[in-house]
Length: 206
Image (cartoon, rainbow, N blue to C red; front, side, top):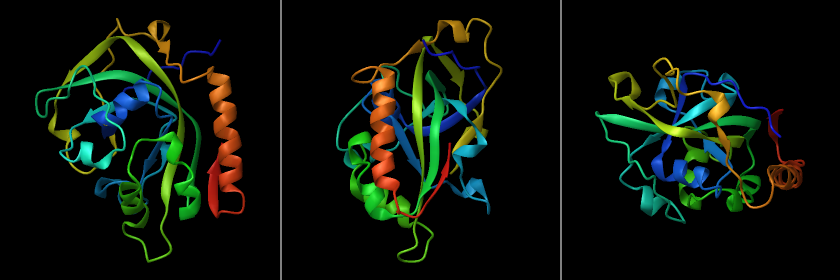
């Protein structure tokens, strides 16, 4: 049995299709370069160890993914945002070797061209990188819908959420099962990451 996480009013902006894939157990990692709002220090998963997935709309989602996943509740820009999943970061690191990033393909639904664009963005040729986080995923008993606020917009990864309603508690969270047990998935990820990251030029935080 896994100890339930402490809920925190922090959201991580991600495509709604990716949120759906994570909720379905198909995807267990996120790869992020970071947005303009991250500033000079750049993006890092070290900022938050646990957070709500904050689904966003993006008109090229279907063209940018190898598989199609959809949320039952679609986020409505400038109206309401459905928060259904809370995740914990099990492992995080900065990937600086493109061949290593390519080998992570079985663990996500993005097309290679999307990841390559993120990897190279803002960096000198041959010196790209991307931030990686391996997740444990929990589903809320009921979707938490929050009103849209202008502070959620823009090119940012993290958003501050309203106070969490009293009826939403960690006790009601349900662990999302990927194929096999959570421990088996963790072992698989650890094995793959160990082989991928060996001598690959990566900064790791556990």
